[in-house]
Structures are given as C-alpha cells and as structure tokens.
Image (cartoon, rainbow, N blue to C red; front, side, top):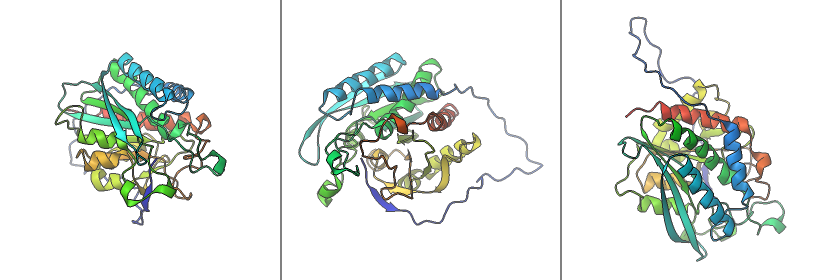
Length: 329
C-alpha cells in the first residue's frame, strides 16, 4: 500500500492551544454561526461493509468493477456532479491496470474549493501476513481502502442535502495499493504506489484545477485509532494539519488526533502536494509500537470489518464536517 520512509525524530509538539488568549480590552469577534449536519457513523459503517461485501477491489477483477459502479451510483444519488477518469496504468511488474478515478463535485461553479480524497482499491497480496501461505491472497481492505471511502460517502450524502459555502470535490483514487512488495522494491519502482493519484495530478479532470487544500483519509476506522501529525503533511501543509487537529480537539477528539509528530508516509497526498501543487494532509492511523508503523492487520487477510469501529468513524467524520462547513468563500 505504501512504505514508511522514515520515523520522525522531531521534538514532540506541544499539545497546548496555539491561539493566544484575548486581552480584556479586545472586542469580541463577529462570529457567524454555521449549521453543520450531523455525521452518522452507522451510515458510514454500512458504506464500508458494502464495499467489503464485493470482495477485494483489485484492479482488473469483476469485484473491482462492481464496487466502482456502486461508488459512481452513490455519488450520483447524493447529488454530485460525477466525473470518471479512466486510464490504463502500468504497474511495477508490467501489468496494465484498468483504473478509474471516481470524482464527485459539489458547487462546481465555486472558485474556492476543498479536495477530499481516499483510495478505493485494495492490495492484491497479503504480503505482511504472518502466515506465508496467505501472501498471495488479496486483502479485504475494510480499513485500508473502504474506511476512508465510507466516511466520504456519508459526507457526500450531507453535501447533497445541505451544500457547504465552498466547492467540494471528492476523489476516490484507484490503483493506490498495487505497489511492489518489499522483496521486489528497488529504486526503479519507488513510485509504484499511488498510481491513480499520480495520474490525476498530471492529468487533472479539469484543466487548471485548483483547491485551497486537500485532505486524504486512509485507514480511519480502527478501534482506538491514533492519527499523528504525518510529516509530509507537516512539510507541505502544516496549517491544514493545525486546522484539523485543533478542530478535533475542540470537539473532544484529542485522544484520536494526537498532537505529536508521526512518520513520513508514501501515500496519495505526496503526489497531490508534489505534482498537483495542492497543499494536502494525510489523516492515517499510525502505530509507533509496531514494526510497520500500522495496525497488526495491515496488508494481511485480517483487514476485515472486525477492525472497524463506529466511534473512530464518528470522530473523523464529525471533525471533517466541521472543517468543511466552516469554510467560507
């Protein structure tokens, strides 16, 4: 799916609020009250389960096609302007992947836009499974793949009923998880991950497309998940990390959104930053106590619905709903 480039050795960030207190003589700001719909974790959970029920969503399989059709239909049902970007992408081993980036746009005429994205494909191999007999088995991808898409579908449902003040584009990127296994990694296939986002970054669905910032959701459903401040996000878009983490803390979710540095991870946001020039962050479960930096089920046959927790989905979804609906043109 992605590789951990390095573990950050930066000093731990302060968890104290960064906004200085107001003086007694300072006049209160004119605060505009914004109505934010209530994110429903039960709905997000069902959207995740529906994807998993199709089976592994590996490119060039009928399960992949069926799930792609489902995602297109849901975005259409939720009032999005649908765009499907199809491409033949070459994997590290020469396989040509029939890939589809699925895009749903809200307020398409709005100049100020927010980009929300996740990958919808799953890994063809469980190459980190402790049982080598499972290494050729595709990953179910409940958390790694379906969770981010499920949260964004629930957000899309609300966008269709009560549009935010700004434009929002949701992209489900394909072919993220077809990267070379560890035993086949080499400098030549360093960029074998995130093929769909790499393609979009060089061939945007709208020429000259720009967004104020982007937010990637990846592995956002695990019980007691911890989202650290990922270091590529910090480098390119620290102010967006601040925005999201501070909003999460204000909602009581600081135990999910940990205000400390995490690792530096090759993921879709890397190419959206580097190639597309859109400052973007990665909300991704990170475990500094494991060898991989991810959950024990990562890239194994155990990435199933048992690893999806509605409390975590709620924390992520409610935080992002507040972020998006409080944006102004």
